[in-house]
Image (cartoon, rainbow, N blue to C red):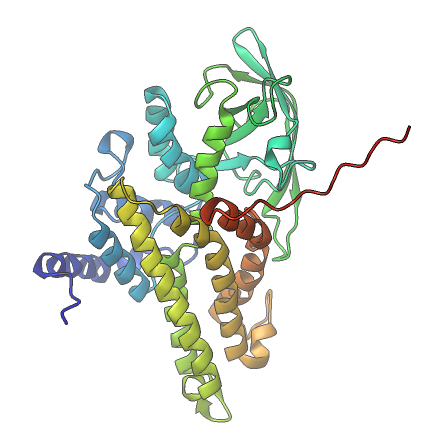
Amino acid sequence: MDLSFGAEYDEFRTEVKQFIAASSDKSPKQAGIGNAEAIAWQKILINNGYAARTIPTEYGGFGAEPDIIESRIISEEFSNAQISTGLGGQGISMLTPVLLEMGTEEQKQQFIKPTIHGEMIWCQGYSEPGAGSDLASLTTKAELDGDEWVINGQKIWTSTAHLADWIFCLVRTEPEAPKHQGISFLLFSMDTPGIDIRPLVDMTGDANFNEVFFTDVRVPKDQIVGQRGQGWQVANAILGHERGSLAPPDAALSRLNGVIKLMNSESVNGERVIDNPVFRDRLMKIQGRVLAMKCNDMRLLSARINKGQDAKLAGMIVKLLGTELRHELESLAIDVMGEIGIAYGDNPYLRGNGSWQYQYMYFLGLIIGGGTSQIQKNIISERGLGMPREPKPAAKANAS
């Protein structure tokens, strides 16, 4: 049985390997928003077609035709080399696809190129103290005053708000409409007067989250995506991209290669960890799940190109399985290191600059963030498998 992609793709794989051999020294040692090295690397990747590959050139992308196999080869070779596949984040992974689909031409021209090139950082204004799992219950309001929206309210768990240049934000513009129909989707600068950002420290020890308060924030009325009162449709499109971007299989494959490398270098009682049957069994189980997610990703790529394919269920499982997989993968690495695995912060014995410990805590948080695993299971069962909705408690009768 010949499982190769064919001579055409062999040539393409050779091109990718040659690029990596010639340019891998430019890959950033540390990823991070606003990192100059990472931004420079992103531009190299776009110019060579390894990032923003199918985004049209008029919006700053490479402009290639979609090709499932080429995308897979790029992912495989970058993962094998354990080098950065480029910038991600809410602007690139979530907003850009929605702007391409639903934005005006002016919005595409204004926002896509600086976003995918890492020059414009975005945050997402969705969750509120009383509207997390039930996002449609949001109360942050926007009232039209002449040519401007006036926004008042609060958002919470707003990742990277303290670093962001712009925000895409859900606001209630039709207070009398049913809750899913009275929402609009606005874009505005985080430098706008009336915005107050307060950091929230998460379990990694960093302030990745924030509370954001809006007091009479004035936004031009044309900075809306979609129609007034139809922001829920835009929000759902964004959520689909968000859940797929929280734990991509390419990153898991790269981390898996890192674990294998670690298991070959660490030892227990003079024996390499990779030769220990208990650890090797754990590795093989995780490796099988990574490969399954990789195949599922190819199915999703195929569905984007072949519009007739139904990959709805395949998309729903990515966030649930991907975040839990990454948490277990990072956990294996910590166990492989033994007592050094519990080191943190500035401990001089850290392996990999503490990335294993940090990612372990980070993905424990992501099992909750972006929709908890329990919520994801409900979505899969009800919307993906057609099972009955979870029954709601009976309303209490009013006392006479």
